[in-house]
Length: 435
Ligand SMILES: Cc1cc2nc3c(=O)[nH]c(=O)nc-3n(C[C@H](O)[C@H](O)[C@H](O)COP(=O)(O)OP(=O)(O)OC[C@H]3O[C@@H](n4cnc5c(N)ncnc54)[C@H](O)[C@@H]3O)c2cc1C
Image (tube, rainbow, N blue to C red):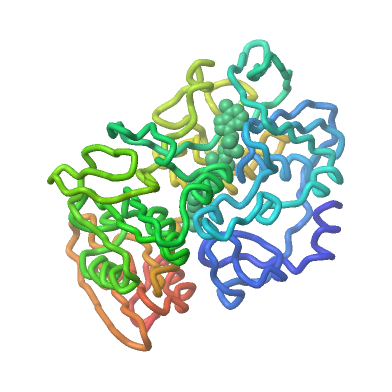
């Protein structure tokens, strides 16, 4: 019923690139930024097999996995209690926007997945500023900092991940920041202004997004990449060289093979002895799943919390989803996958039967006066590849094939054909399909 009401007021579309379902009135995908031409209209059917009960559903975490779990439960069960516990002082928000709006200062309300009224209308109670410290799966109890406790019938563990801070001497100073929360983004804004110097440690997509946001605010930025090539896992050396040129053209310094020795009060020293001025240091060096509470409760953990295709953990009535979970040995650290895992956990906790089917998602980067799309195996598995490289219509295109079938693709510049390219790569099509 609620889903039907929602649909009648919104024209929902699904992004063909990242899978997000959103209101077309937004004009572009709120996660990956593609326009409506890369989206298709969708109609969400009312879920089957719902069952109203007086059960207590407790959801740990305030990210997209938690949000989608709560949504899926309420769509199937109008009468149960749903409580979300989050350590942040905000309702679930669009985390990918943090780096994309770093200096423009979007408030949590600006980037909220849904406004407060959405939770009120559905009787979903969100406890903000509440840090979970322990779970007792035998007694079905959850303990929080400050002495608060909650009982549950079904528990969804969606505590996400935190940024990894390598053990660099000086890394504990206030001007050394990782970006995971609105609070982190606020801290960046309080530390830097136009004309200042900043260092970004890490040349992955989030490091580049942060560097680009700072540069647009007229900050002097140096990016430190510890390897010989940026984004070495996702793109090949040719594409990386072109992106490196685009970065330089924006007045950003990118140093390869740059190992940080120590961080001082206003400078960063590299292993080769060079010294870079830095009023702000942003560290973007990957993530670590928040598993400590699960581990202490005896749940099976292998870096992340191990789940089956229904998002069930090793403990009865405890589900896990999102960045903290791992299914089939793979953990993506991607918004669309965390959202879908959350939905699947909610459906199954509420008595449904849906299995999670991971989808290969592309890397997308907008910034540095260009755009990058990369998907699949771009020559990384040591196979007998054929390569097709093209420069046309303001873009660089590179296709990787094995026995005539596409395994991966890279677009740089105008990436508007990405919907078509993605479909061809995912079905193992031919290069003729995209030319
Ligand atoms: C800056 C940035 C940009 C990104 N850009 C993209 C992008 O462009 N595309 C993409 O696909 N992905 C992107 N991602 C990744 C994406 O945001 C994550 O995959 C997604 O947010 C994971 O959702 P989640 O719900 O599993 O976990 P999280 O979003 O990490 O949410 C976990 C929640 O649990 C809370 N929590 C943690 N521990 C406790 C505790 N003990 N007690 C209570 N609450 C707790 C946290 O505060 C948080 O609210 C980006 C991530 C960041 C940080």
